[in-house]
Length: 531
Image 1: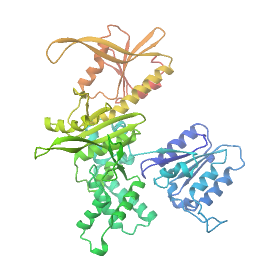
Image 2: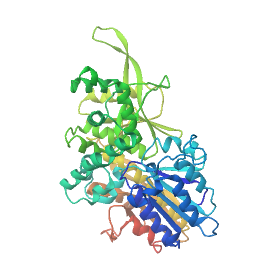
Image 3: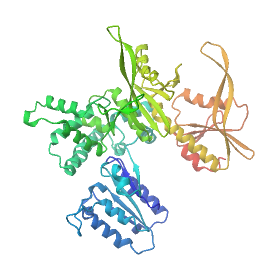
Image 4: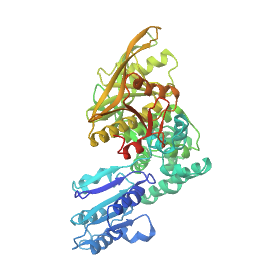
């Protein structure tokens, strides 16, 4: 706030941008004493504000209310991509006036803080830094990740994951009362909102081809393809006459429009050792699985591809750049000769200096499948972290090559687990505590049936003066095994200091029969009497 930047909230329509701005942020401003008439709001997708699609009208209206005054004002402009270009009144034959000109002009007012939302990446993301002359911040919003979705619905994780894989993470899905209303809502978004927007804004002539391209991309998430392959498929499937054949350039243009509307993202192939990108083919992932499923009539529920799409979206939510990795190795062919063979790594996730190789595997029930998933890792020639995300396991473990095997639900929720730990640690420090990680030892039977000393960890030992508390952070304890695992380190301390498990999956606090306090994360953070 008040940093001299235009704050641009981008993302697919109906993902919650307007709610964040016009409901949550507005409420925050009211609670901090900002008068209602000091928040200027224009919703360009509504008829009541249609005149302000003219950037000159918008500028005049805002200046008339704020210019020359000492009070601070906030400007909200919703769906800025609906703004029109208008002729320059002083030079009609010159460069037209756009919303960039209007917002740059208004940003010069010292008593105005500007926030806009937009649903077209070409008009916004790619041009933000240049068009706003370096005076803007982009805040990218996406449909709910699984961890966000689960934090809202709770309950059994497997059931929640199945629902998420079917209906996706569009926020309003959570308020739909039954399956039929959820399906109809998702179908209407595609037909009545997204495609209509593209057709109207981009003057699409071949709506039938645009629709067919959407269907093909939805049917082939996680598969390698390119505009030439898609155009060949369309020409073959529709048996178009020679005059009506579709060129690959037209298909590429339509794919670009779908990407610009945040409906799909392109994931490019990267040569790990050659350190360069391939032009084609690439993979395309849908921004929301529910929209993808609705478009193809909730058929083609291949969990292998759905898992890939969910993992890709989750990595993007975490702020990673994501590529498909390609590595090469020499392998014996059917003729008995050795030849160079390309192997694929599903994802290379990069964030800052950190890089992780990730394979998505629904199930690895044979040694051959396990070897096939691991082979590309061995060909990278480096020591970056390597993970296989699987649907057929619940507990995570490392193999003898250091590759982490982790269940899909555990993988999707682990970020929230770490966030919770970080929040608890920071809160304890704010309360003036010294905080350490505790280590205790106990004798446990191993796989061979022998007893051996095993180290167990307590997430936090919080000390303030003479008071000491042991604290475990647990996102959810839905089984007796997980509950026992969290409690075991407490039993090994050999003392009677207070012991707490801070959890995300409960609302009311309670003590178990060993005197351990189980308390919800929000309750813990708001109760200053705990320590």
